[in-house]
Each structure stands twice: as C-alpha cells, then as structure tokens.
Length: 315
Image 1 (cartoon, rainbow, N blue to C red):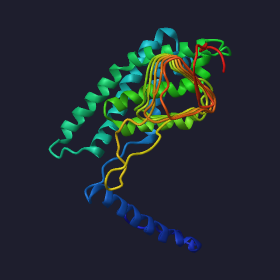
Image 2 (cartoon, rainbow, N blue to C red):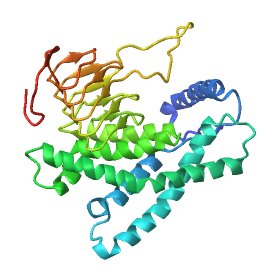
Image 3 (spheres, rainbow, N blue to C red):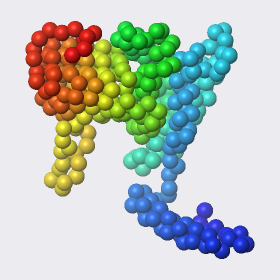
Image 4 (tube, one colour):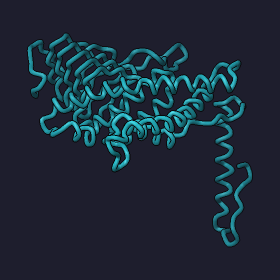
C-alpha cells in the first residue's frame, strides 16, 4: 500500500508514525531494487505456511502420536490420505514461490514453472515412506542408547533430539530436490523448537541419536554414518572459510566433518573442518578436534589413543 496512513482525530501526538512509514518505504524500495534489479516483486514463501505444512507432515509420519485427538486406528489411512492431499497443495504453492524467486530461466513460462513445482512436491511426498523407515531406526537407536527411555512412544513424544531429526529428514528431502530455502525454513523451525541446529544439507545415516541435544550444531556438508550418537553442545563445524581473489566467500565447498559408522561424540566436543572420524571412534567431552582420527580411536582432551573401548560406556 503506497498511501501513507491517516491519523485519527486527536492522534496528533502520533504524527511521527508517518515519517517512520516513509523512511521504511524508502529502505524497502532500495533493498528490493538491489535484490530484484528493479523487476516485479515475486511472491515470497511463507514461514507460517511451512510451520503448518511441517506439523501436518509430522502427523502423517506418526499419526497416532501427532494426529488429532481421538483419531481411531480404523481411520488412520483416511486421515493420512486427506492430510497428504491438503498438504500437497499447500507445499506445491510454497515450492512454486521458491522456484519463481530463484528462477534464472527467463524462457520458463508460469505454466512450466507450476509443472516443475508439482513434480517436486510429488517426488517429495513419494519419499515419505522412506523417511518413516529411517526415523524408525533413529527411534530404536534412542531407545537402545538411553537407559532412561521407558518406551518408543515416550521417545517420539518427548525427545528433542528425535523431534529435530524428524524435521531434518523432511528438510533434507526438500534440500535434495532443490528447494533449499524451504528446507532451511524447516530446519530453522526445528532449531527454534528444540535448540538443535542441523543444516538440511547434512547427510545422516540410519540409527542416528542425539541425546539431550541442546546446542548441537551440524553444518551443511557434514556426512554422518550409521548408528552415530551425539550428546548436547556438540559442534560439527567448519574450520575456516575460503575466499576468492575478490575476498568473497567461496560457497559450496565441503568444509564439515565426515563421521563414520558407530562413532560416539560426547557433550561439548567441537569437531572442525573436512576431517574424518574413523568408524567406532569415541570423542570425549569438551575435546577440540581439527585433525582426522583412525577407526577405533579414543580421543580425550584432544589426545588420541588407539585403543579398544565400549560405545555404550562413558569416558
């Protein structure tokens, strides 16, 4: 709306609002001109819509836990079908908006763009059984790895690490299909809800368990194998950021750790750079690690010791 607001009679003390509106309009126009080169403003994806979509998808994956109260076992399939139908339409619109926002193909017509959005949404929906199968291995890993866990249902309802991983598995599929902004929105929804920050680009194998979870950070190019366990405040980050000859950051390079199968990383550990933590290794609490370690290594206070250990025990 271009016209300035009109103040009601007696609201003279609020005339400063008009000047703020004008200044914000100028700043907004300058920012939009820079981003869109003076072209028409595209529709932006909606964070609120994505929150609703994520909640619906979580209820589809685990309907007895997150479906509507009173949902009967005999009605599960109908609930899932109806929810997927409505959610597909909502997601399709958000995918279309992202494609329009980042479209570099000037020859692509609106109809072609809509068809591409529909194809992406369809492929994403078809991946949901695979997502559920992976999540079941994560929940089993949590149950087997935490002596405080009384049941799988408790884990699904209560564990922030599992909540974050559920949303990461969904976000990673969006990321893989090329709608990276929507994927980031999903990951940031999980981050705000759980305190666990997993970039949707991170590749994570089956049986992944984050215990407690608060403060965990996993970077975009991290690769995590099977049956890996992390504790709170673990960081899998980048050691440095490369720049080009103009001083701009080089994007897209692999810069985060590779964690091989059956590794345990204890609370507060920081693992940085494109290094490899060998299979079956254990990284102790508060360790700062910037070099690769061989399989079966026990690292405590940044000193590597090649020795056997029990993944189920402490350090």
